[in-house]
Amino acid sequence: MRFKENEIVLYQNGDSFEVGKIKRLCDDGAFVWYHSGDTAAKTPYENLHKLQNAVYLSDANLGKA
Image (cartoon, rainbow, N blue to C red; front, side, top):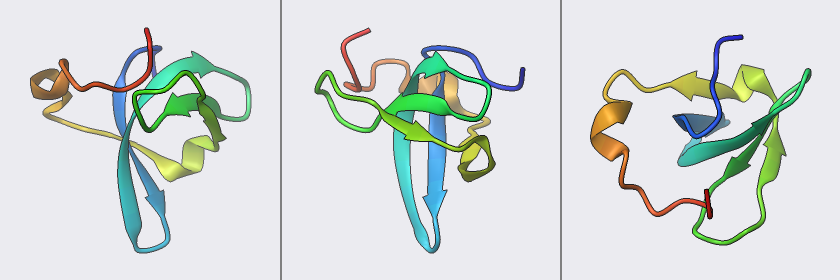
């Protein structure tokens, strides 16, 4: 699998982008936190992108992991 739980990712929705943190992986997408709350949104893998410098965002306040 390309992605890992607790990985910081970039979500692309048309011309809009959001930073998120993967909560849980599924066969057809991942549940991703886009805020500091408890709710994660299921996002298709084709809309998620890896960040080359995600290690520098490890303290991002996303989700309750």
